[in-house]
Length: 214
Length: 244
Figure 1 (cartoon, rainbow over the protein chains, first blue to last red):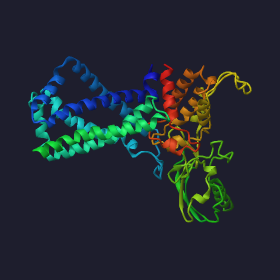
Figure 2 (figure 1 turned 45 degrees about the vertical axis):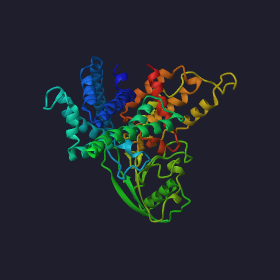
Figure 3 (figure 1 turned 180 degrees about the vertical axis):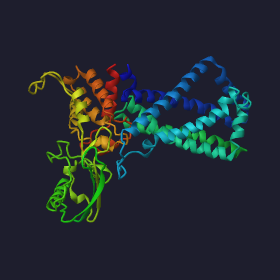
Figure 4 (figure 1 turned 180 degrees about the horizontal axis):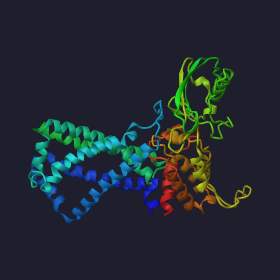
């Protein structure tokens, strides 16, 4: 059983599945966030309320948190094994042709994790009553946060790094799940690029528009 | 040509190695990289010094013995070439060339530039074969194989098991090697009956030997002297999932 669950291929499979689930969730999150652009707080607050109370969403939320935990745990296990597999480094740095984004997944992923922790403090912990804030008016909380210049800059940096992470993630997931071949690889690369630009840009443009309208 | 060579010298597996520098003149641009090392060694021997130990055999690019890490590239900076096929005309007069052994936990250094690559042999022994005696080439129309499959199988079967993929990969992963071995059988009818056992056994052995995990960077494909394609790894993954 251990061989199936923890082989080099299986660990990547689990990692890719968890990652794909997170990739599916991001457009949903972006769709809700775009409601912040309206001057009426009602739609966004209703959506936030729906996400917080609807039973099916609750189940998805548990799956989502599990996916995040599994993705991070497996990512760290794989990375530590990878570091250990070359105890003596080369004196001359490896000059093999690779995409820059693929080499720094642990670091771009780590940056996204830092942002997630901040994000959880902002919203999820308000919902749970751990930190202060009005759980019935997330619209106002978001608008206040987007009024802080330092927060917005951090937000943009994190989404830029998320974009780098996503570009390699999507094509890597297809390769890991065995869905890549000579014909599909260029198609998957284009889809990955579009996804990695549209999703982070969609999130990043919201504080900009809010500031501009103000 | 005159060159400055920085070469990793290590007496044995237990000894602590270090780089040694050698100035070598009289190198012809027509020499192969190994001939250049032969020239260095003949000079070292004439000076009663220990020659540099390096692996080599066929010098025709098919045995996979002569792997070394040259200026940051496995088999040197020219794509699609083994070290024995690497010509000195690709280097500049006066250039400093740094030569290191493959670096990976499953490839311990035996001496100087020679590493123990038996970890790859063990993967091969675990499943890289078919158990029946296939005999001579069968009559062409008795067992039809699609041209495309046959071409892909051949393209993966040309892997020489040199270890450049492991050396190039930032994770020292052997996935390209294993995927080439799995693919060459998976694509042909002769390999199908044992496909499940083969892929499981080879992946299991790969893990046991301590190779890293694939992170799909593509460095292996870029540096493979036989230009084995990354799609083989996707096929290996498919074969692995299908085996359960």
